[in-house]
Image 1: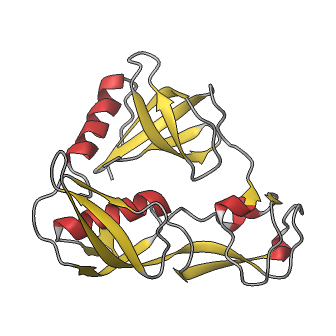
Image 2: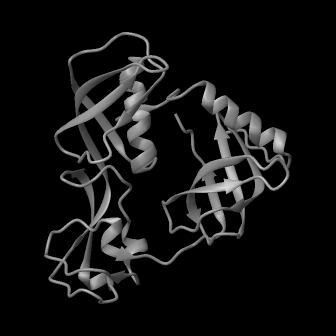
Length: 233
């Protein structure tokens, strides 16, 4: 894989622009390219929320839709594991409502035993799982490494999926901090220094601003001081 680093605003801007011009391009579900534009856009929207490690399978879309569209939005209150409400925007002030069956396989953590609220979570309290997940919001779930050492905000029952709102994670990026922003397209990687507008823990989507151009982008926290620019549809 060709990898290059460019330390100019133009390089990272070109990559971000390229991402914006091709929403969902190259998105795959279970290792198979998704040819249908609507399904490809839906897979891309789900992976933006769940993280790149998720496997997404889109089932029946009702009613079926094959017309042109500008973007789509998943209902904010939608939960994984059943019909999901989708708004398809077909023009400046026009939209169509459909529902879609969406299944997701991802990494997540469950409580391995009863845990009292307020406790700092230890490895013995937890169990790492990779599999189909259901009845949780469309949001990236914390991994075992992220949960260990976090403080529980509520009691946990055995087998309960640990959601981001259940723990107080340690922030890896703080508002006003200088961060390294990465963007990738094809085999090329660009990086540039940005300023974090928001703070966040690993997996959180925050705003970052280019100190030279004042352009604001959205990025996902990867590690301490490191974020990855995401393709916003």
